Image (cartoon, rainbow, N blue to C red; front, side, top):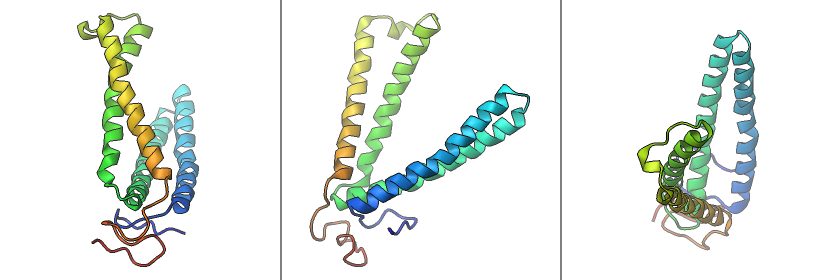
Length: 167
């Protein structure tokens, strides 16, 4: 069992990360069920139920993601990397999804595209934004699954050795 305290200090090993990852996946099924119930409620006359289910699902998924990000930071600490590396992933991904989403929406809806999206250079630019997002996520997945650094590092002692101390 890993210590899932409310901080990002210390290190965890690969086995503890794997267990936490599967536990996180299992807990994320609860908000998924709430989102489905919200969709069913919106299809019927129970709008208040759907809004309540969506709000509860959003709160739960936000909480679970926050806690799992703490676990991922501690795993990156075991690799002697800063947890700030993780912030690259959502930043580039949100940028790529925004540009791609505008392009997809205007294509599907047959709406007038914004002027900056009409030329083929911009459509090529979408891939220029999307490829770094993919590369950063592959890099993070690689780092999260590799063995940790042996011995103490600047984030503390190895997992299981004792109380984590910052050097």
